[in-house]
Every structure is written in structure tokens, then in C-alpha cells.
Amino acid sequence: MRAREIMKRPVVTLAGEDIAEIKDIVYAGEAGEVAGFTLNGRGLFAGPLKTALPWSAVHGLGRDAVMVTGEDVLEERTVVVERSARSGAGGDVLGSRVLTDSGTYLGEIVEVILSVGERAEVVGYEIDSSEALGKDGRKVLIPLPDALSVSGEALMVPAAAVEFVTDDLSGFGAAIDAFRARLRENEGSASQAPGQTA
Amino acid sequence: MEWWGYLILVLLVVVIAVGAVFAVQARRRSGGVISLDSEKKGGTGS
Image (tube, rainbow over all chains, first blue to last red; front, top):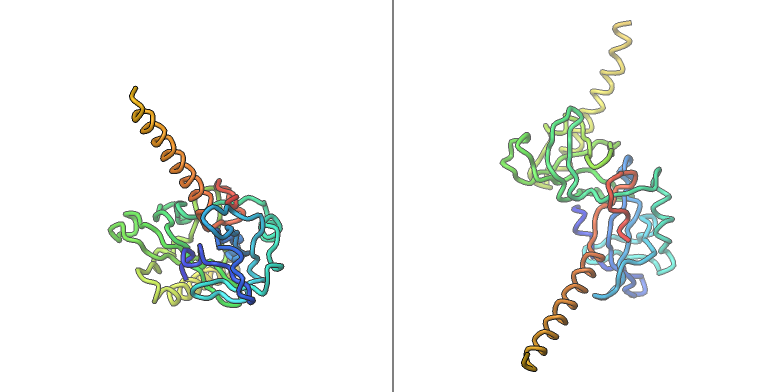
């Protein structure tokens, strides 16, 4: 699921009360796990709310609305953020640059791909590809490892991610699994190597 | 200046003010994907 599909969705209680609208999706930088959502008030002139919706309080994430049991599940925004953040700092990743760990610039993030189930997790980025990817500047999907590297304004991905870039969302799940399996293989062979030489 | 000159001036100011209010409001309400522990500025969208 694309992150933008969730933004601006109304937050509705099971009693049918329309209490807010999704503003930002907040996730833990390294684990990639979605912590919750910041909210806007309803109506054109309503600004951002001081409360946020933790992921654990989401009753259902439907096509047209995010369902919650009641307004009482909303928490202070700072509480939701501090529960997942180590440093307390945060930044919007849309528009950030993506670099491989070998120093190749891959492009700029235009969308974040989420896997939604019992928990929601950031599993990939959609990027405006650079020349290095050889995709004529098209938008492509790039898978992410289990643990993300977040540093400054650039987001780092393993160089092997380039081999698993796809053009559409339908085959992206398989690309993520294959990419993560490759990383585990590499880690396994790297941990065996010192033993062989000793 | 003729009276209609002042009228046009006042209408222009009103249109610019309303446009500015809408622009600020749209900016405040725009969403993002916030990565915690990232140092990039942008905060949590307050």
C-alpha cells in the first residue's frame, strides 16, 4: 500500500462519528514499524490536532476510512512520537535522497510503500530514479531491508537493493522477500568467513 | 484617484489576503511520512 493512500483519510469511530483526518504517517526510523498517525481536524479551516492516533488503537484500516473504537483512543502527539523515537527527532522522508552503502545516488523518494497487517511496516520506497539505475528517470520501487539506516538527509540502502528494483507494485512483495533472503545469505556467509580463515 | 480606483485596490487586497490564508492553511494541513530518529528538518508536522 502506498502511504499517500492513507493520508487525508477520515478517522471514524465505530459509533459513526467523524473525528479527524490522517495527516502524517509516523514510523520508527530504524525498525521501519509504523508508530501511528498525526491528525488534522475536520473541515477546511481546522488545523493540525495536538492528539495522534497510535497504530495499536487502529480498529480497521479500510479503503475509505480509518476506524477506531472511540475518540478516547487518541493520545497526545508527543507521547506517540516519544514511544518509538530514540532521539525524539523526526523528518519527512518524502523528497529525501536515497544512496546505496557503496555511495551511488539512486534517486529521490516520492512515495513510501507500507506492508499492512497486524502491524504496519515500511518495506520500500518509490523513487524518481537517477541515471545510475538506467530506468530513464522513471519512477521505480526499491525494497528495504528489515533494519533501515537513517542518517541525516540521505537514506541509505544496501547496494544489493539495486538488483531488486521493480516498476510496479504487483511484483514488489516477491522482490522484497528475495532481497531480504539475499541479505540474510550474505550475513551468513560473512559470519562464516572469519571461522574458515582462523 | 477616482472612487472606483480605491474600490479595485481594496478588492485586490482582500483577494490577496484570502489567497494567503488558504495557502497557509493548505501548508499546515499537508501530510508527510515522518521517520523518527531522522535528523532531517520537518518535525512532526505541527
